[in-house]
Image (cartoon, rainbow, N blue to C red; front, top):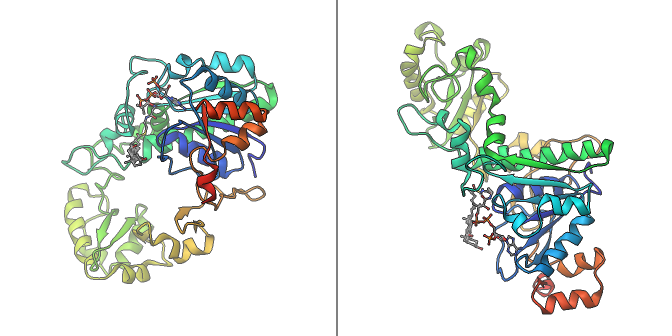
Amino acid sequence: MALAGVRVIELAGLAPAPFCGMILSDFGARVIRVDRTKVAMTVDTQARGKQSVALNLKNPKGVAVLKKLCVQSDVVLEPYRKGVMEKMGLGPEDLLKENPRLIYARLTGYGQSGSYAKAAGHDINYLAMSGLLSMLGRTSEKPYAPLNLVADFAGGGLMCAFGIVLALLERSRSGRGQIIDASMVEGAAYVGSFMWKSRSLGLWNRPRGENLLDSGAPFYDTYRTSDGKYMAVGAIEPQFYQQLIQGLGLDDADLPAQMSISDWPQLRETFSRVFATKTQAEWSQVFDGTDACVTPVLSVDKVLSHPHNKARGSFFKDSQGEISPRPAPVLSRSPAEPCRFRDPFIGEHTRSVLKEYGFEQAQIEQLLSAGIVECNEAKARL
Ligand SMILES: C[C@H](CCC[C@H](C)C(=O)SCCNC(=O)CCNC(=O)[C@H](O)C(C)(C)COP(=O)(O)OP(=O)(O)OC[C@H]1O[C@@H](n2cnc3c(N)ncnc32)[C@H](O)[C@@H]1OP(=O)(O)O)[C@H]1CC[C@H]2[C@@H]3[C@H](O)C[C@@H]4C[C@H](O)CC[C@]4(C)[C@H]3C[C@H](O)[C@]12C
């Protein structure tokens, strides 16, 4: 796999950093998640392929253990508020001094500088600060955050993984590590570059929800079917729009022009009325194999069985029977191979990892009995 041989220490976080760690793990990196001690259950639902070491970083001996892990690693990924790592004596200066090849990835909401750097926040706040939230939502409604996909995952976890891969590539030439300041505000805004770069085209001149791609246009929207499901319509180009009209059984001569904005409400009503006459399966039959750009809105349970997804293996079931998306993109020679085994228990690999990283048996026992590290091998065997 592309990242085979890369060792990553991931400090346990909420959503974006776990996703970043999972991407690296899916593509072959060895990811060791450092969990807190005295925690019964992990909140990391993106732990695929990771190992877990439970370590008390409030104790200087715990800090020393982490340093030793980082000296022998390629990447450390930290998801805390600015200053937390420095307070524990684990800031970039401390760790890069001991391992100048280390890539030190800091995944935060607001970045390492600026007046918000130390403030708490979540996806919706970062999305708001990126400018993008102001553009999301239906006409005459308040701004609407699309789950926590944009800032946490696209602008946060994924962008941070991209930064790590870039830093690894650069290190192969320079031999030196570096610090990655991954701000979710900036990551989200960067993902949304198109919104800024396409303003001159007049794509976003109208109020929220009344533009071409924000559900303003009737040919770029979803429609309810007779069985209460939905179809997604993305027929922008005139030649594809024609196929939409044909599939709906409408006559172009009876309809206003596609780009007549003042007629969009009337056109939407017509489309809504027609889509409500057939089931989702019936509409799929009508549009499959055409270029009308009309697809069923699949539920997360149904994606696995759709013939297209099935043919490509786009989703898979793990050993627990859980459906997951296959890691993307697909590399021809060294594709990702997601681990199908269950996620680790907190501290499941403490003993084995410490041993591998050069701790003597007696040292490990001392750390265990002092509560500086915790081990959960027994739970794993149950
Ligand atoms: C699914 C829910 C998650 C939603 C995601 C949400 C939408 C997001 O947007 S996530 C993005 C959040 N932002 C960031 O990550 C930006 C960077 N980070 C921060 O800004 C902050 O870390 C923070 C704001 C996120 C949190 O601030 P906090 O003050 O808590 O922490 P920090 O200042 O960063 O300091 C960390 C302190 O921790 C110490 N530390 C760290 N490691 C160790 C260690 N190994 N040992 C000892 N100490 C350690 C460190 O020293 C710092 O200490 P100090 O403060 O003293 O300096 C989920 C959200 C909530 C979940 C639910 C909940 O947990 C309850 C249940 C739990 C159960 O197990 C499972 C079910 C739950 C219902 C659970 C379900 C879901 O997972 C959630 C709903």
